[in-house]
Amino acid sequence: MKLAIEIDPRSGFCNGVVRAVQQAENYLRYNERLYSLGAIVHNSVELERLKKKGLEIISIVEVEQLRHDVILVRAHGEPPGTYELARRNDLQVIDCTCPVVLKLQERVRETWLRLRGTGGQVVIFGKKGHAEVNGLVGQTEGEAIVVGSEEEVRSIDFSRPVALFSQTTKDPDEFRRIARSIRARRPDAEVYDTICRQVAQRHKSLISFARNHSVILFVSGRESSNGKVLFDLCRSVNARTYWLENASQIDLSWFRDGDSAGICGATSTPKWQLEEIFISLQAATK
Ligand code: SF4
Image (tube, rainbow, N blue to C red; front, side, top):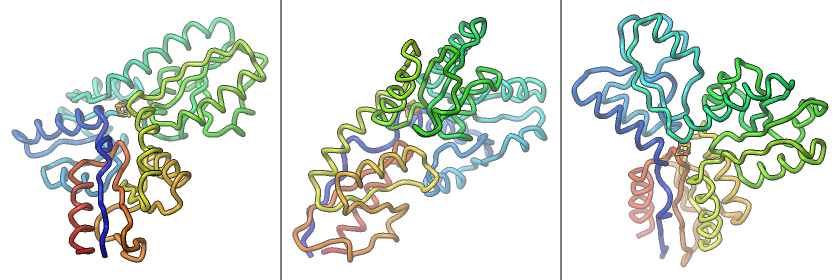
């Protein structure tokens, strides 16, 4: 079977994840073990690679048991309580919070402090329970309201002022719909589009990439929230889009002779994994 295969040149880790993985690898070059608070990246294949080098994923409950150790805070960031815990337990923190997330945390905190006196509410468009969202809610001492969809906008009290932010990896179109829905009920609502520029640009470029290929192989961990958003985006413009986590999941019945296959992924999918899929697909269709 003849296939033209192309890797999306814009896919691969985002800057925040590249930085976190690099810092973990630098540390593990000279040390046997490093604790990461939560998965450093939502990608099981990449996690396995890092685990072999000594990275150990632990939960906040396990951090409570540690003393005089080193922990890594991933790109998603953490609420202030985590840093207090680290201080109490004399833990050294390798802080890999992405600078974009850090800036967002500061803005959320400043806005919450400013609105507090007027009874205002900070609203975050994001996935409930997601680490980045927990970190943002932590800036408001747990008061921020998290909305995951347009329907959930109903949980906001529109008799009080509102300021809307977004988790960095959310869908820009969905954010605009939610902002419109809030402004329809509260025209003076403050709206801050805090979607990461890298993510927003990837949305645009991925639409044309998915349109320009007959079949799309979307590579990502199932637990990646950005993966879910970008997969749905590809699927919306190309019905022959398939989600896979590794090369063993390639199914040749997806392809027809003469197809062009596009390989792309989430911000948590490493470039090397896309290349691995490319090589496997090339070998299987020779
Ligand atoms: S998606 Fe953007 S904000 Fe989020 S970690 Fe990556 S670079 Fe940082």
